[in-house]
Length: 93
Image (cartoon, rainbow, N blue to C red):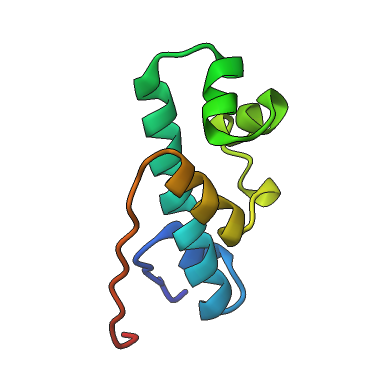
């Protein structure tokens, strides 16, 4: 039996490198926005209003329901949370 190693969980779970890259970016953004929202220490209604989304949508974010958020949506939420995104592009391993 051959043992495979991966640099992150998405590389192990996704069918293609492109899908793994998308999921990695989405999970990174989701974690960052979630941390920012928790740092505000506001009721969910107020935090949702600050992000320009509904409270149920914020609940999905805080519960890590990544399948409910596109990369575009998470980029927009990151900006609404007052965070700046920096990208690093490198050759594939």
